[in-house]
Image (cartoon, rainbow, N blue to C red; front, side, top):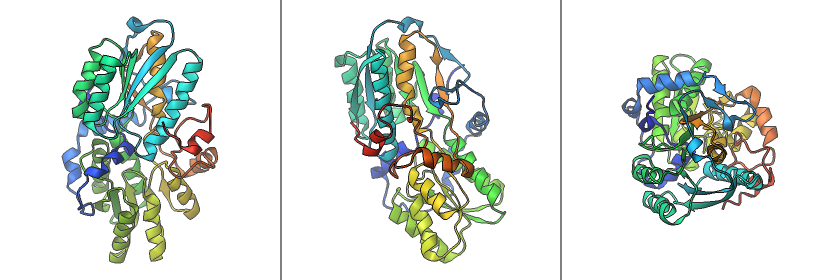
Length: 393
């Protein structure tokens, strides 16, 4: 079955790297945008995947996948440690930093096992042209046994990914998609529609028809963020929930201003976010106004989980599984062992509920606010100090 790579989505926190491109009118509401992005087939697919049975051990979710087309890797089987070349979009926000720290510690394990000799990493610093040059360097000069690519953007990076595929060496794409199916495997959580469905259904279940929800969106034009809102907006409309959405640029001060202005105008019953960064600022606006806490969805960033517990508000922490940063290196190990890998490796994406919050707070005690609870690195060397120190590189 042909994979629909063009429909796949960027990682949510990775979208923060595009903030510099955001215009100055970030506070403008844009309630019609979601309909331009809504694709019923994609909504239905990801809605079904939310309840899918994942192959593999739930204790190692970074190795789980939805059953589907597999890539035969027997031709890549060979002994000895391999060099991996990693073209990374950036480490310019806490989500990517958390993930890269986990990836580095997974590398330590695989080096000790003799599966990987080294990982040469080039950081594109959120620039398409830099990443294209990085990939072309790896192809011509890197002496790479395998390529791992986390694309900065979809269309622009596609030709460079195709050139890497043409080398005949394994190519692992993860986090964001490209417009080609040539990679040995494409690794990602379920997607933006699943996030939108999880969050909107939670709000609908805890609100009444006619209640008002303020939607705080980072920026326009990024697939995973747009599809999150497209899915949520449809569910809100179908259930009679009044919504008002604003682009915030991910700026806590702007978030607080938007919420304060909304509270002056009347009651706000719910807050929906397409990423949890800045969630604390939104909650503080209610505290400053002396208003009741809203029903709210944030993210599995520790700052939101801690504020959620402190306030006792009715909340949900959706997840765009940060543990996916372990999977590419483990996929390379499998590929060079000749083991089949999923052609499209869809990882679990499960929100943190109130009854699970204490578990994740305890497991991540002492870790900084910018850390992500479902990073999946508790069993790796260096835990927890590596993630506390945050020395990325």
